[in-house]
Length: 175
Image (cartoon, rainbow, N blue to C red; front, side, top):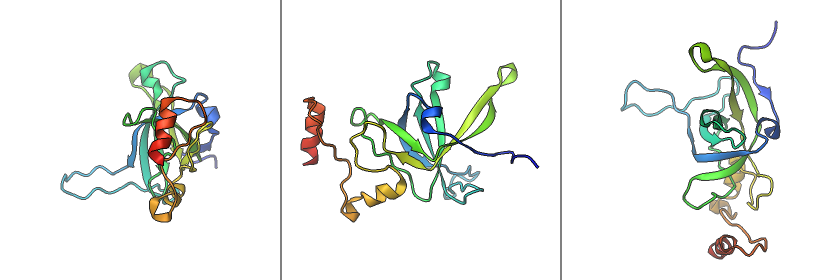
């Protein structure tokens, strides 16, 4: 019988991305192409799991070449995954993340005589990055649990005694 054509292999985050990942921008719905511009957008649904698809663009610090450093990940979740880590600089849109439920599918990339093996990445949400001081698991359900409507705190960070102005100001803003 053999494996399915689009079999997804489970892989540990540290094995796939030994230096971690940086989310560039926000996680957005993965919408189907619509010929009619006035038609309402329809979000793609994964055929295997029946879950909605979300997409994000990441930078892999382990790669030197720009073309290899950019990584696209498809998230499979009913609600939009929200990263729990804070941005490097407020407003820059870049934050360190760790993915949970990571799976890969091999694919052919490149064109002409420069084809090579590449990977399609799938994840179920965000895990708490190692060494992070955030307070949530980062998956969609954890984001809902930490929402102001449920009484949880979001976006707060405590100082760890480093004495830097950014840690102190973040704590002061949260208070």
